[in-house]
Length: 207
Image (cartoon, rainbow, N blue to C red):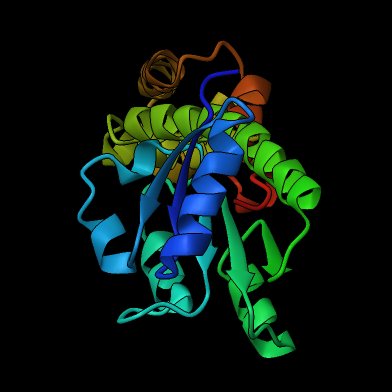
């Protein structure tokens, strides 16, 4: 497994330290933060493999922090905790991508199960994020004309049809097609379509 670093964000020092001890005792590397602001100031916050976040914090609330994390290029899986849980907050947390929502007092075994699930999800998500970043970088290398040709390739049109639609020669289409395949790292239209389909949020799953 790539890593087992967990961030514990809770303004209750006793709860925070208890969670750190519990997780450290199970082979995790747990780090405690007493506020969302302190966590955001951490330069390697995105490198954690999971975040255990209390809903009610001094200053920035857990939901507010989760909203900020949702804007990150990549955010580790988040488990929300609260002693005052209710359905609206649970729904809000899950819509923002939280992996789970647990009420205090929680069962240690259940929490450890969810921590392990978060780490496994993180491993999967990072692989997917890496692939998406690679595809996005490749797409950025395409010229406007190459993008036009690519879109027509994806509709299943032949070189002759593309040439007629764009009012360019067949030879030019062939050159653009070859460049698109080369930049995208594929060898066929089918492979190109599959690569771009993997970019769809529907294939990503929850955080």
